[in-house]
Length: 518
Ligand code: NAD
Image (cartoon, rainbow, N blue to C red):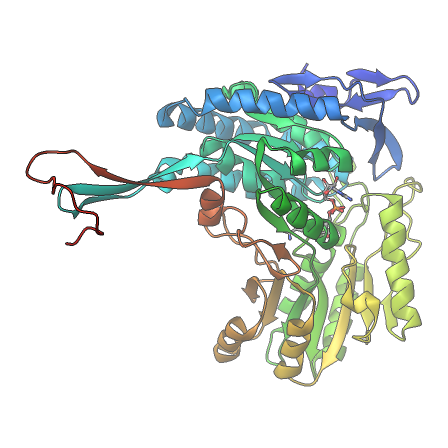
């Protein structure tokens, strides 16, 4: 039975809850958990517990790591050509069957199907980049660096590498890392979010079909215990983390203390700066797309519009008009018709989003469109929250300063470009930002002056393509290695420099205790 089929048919049953238990993928096969600990997995559109996910115990963590250590020994012996052919097969299978994966994502995350397909496509880009790995991991050679001496470098895999991913992109975020890690010769242990754990298993099965040896791609389901097991194991050489800022910082500090390479990408609060010369219809379209797409559960979502006066009133009216036309419902669609926006991931998260709107209101903001208490007919138990628009939010409010991670767009009215820039640069995060203007000089100034890692110029969600790298500044990225692109290949390899001389009588200088002279 494929993972896609098992997404609807029980594989193993949790006697207490009588629902399917989603478990690990260890040594090239599904591995039922014996930990006795599980967490619920919801269909967020219906609010129903669709399955439970196993939470690994120490024995399962150890088994996963041991299998990855063994897998690495096999995989590192594969020639470049053989590795490349596995990658090409994986890409072909993914491309042919991505709709299955999209359906799994929508069922557990809630995002609309076309958005789930988009997420997979952005991950597939990285797979495609990784197929060209021979060029990106080949070393360099300097002939005759000194007389009769050649110097060259090799890029070798690290060994077993850990990936810990968030709920909001259950396929794309792991794919930011694992295609490159595997191409470079490493064995991967992926610890997906316990909120939507099935996509990782589907990907594991696809790797198996593509010919990847057992143990090279492992899925370890779990919570903090599994994460800490990876952070502290001497066998795990590196950690790639994406999630909220407090956890990113914890991951960075703990894994570094245990001698690992770490890249830890954190949260965000992305601003869109709108100059008075911008096309307000274009801005309103993009603010709605970037603010409410995936119900705002994107680390590159726009959550604040900085409107340089006098445009705020017009812009707010245009955004409000567009919000009124959005369709909200089950991301899977009804009779082939998809809504614009699905539910939030859990009721707990929905309530947290709602509490931020309460905070904004208490702090004196004007709630222009209120999504609190939103329900969808026939899906009253789903975790829906309506698109929300807030005007005049005080910049001292926690609702302005903190990440909300929901369909809540706030407007701050500013009097100048400089005032807007100052607000962006004084925030704790530095993931993404965008400027909307027709003034090339202003845009050029912005890209130079703004303290943010990814910048859009008339582009609201500037996620870099696979051959550039993804990463923010400040509290949005701990460590110095960004995801994918050249950064990815550097992160997942370590270099050796070799200085070599093949002795012959003419080049051998005899005894000389000093540094060699030219
Ligand atoms: P999260 O931090 O709650 O969880 C991320 C991962 O960490 C999960 O696998 C989870 O099981 C694990 N985890 C959670 N608590 C832990 C703990 N105490 N100890 C050890 N591990 C723990 O994040 P989330 O809610 O799944 O995802 C949303 C967050 O991710 C948002 O803040 C969003 O901005 C961020 N995000 C950032 C990027 C980026 O590129 N910067 C991309 C996507 C998401």
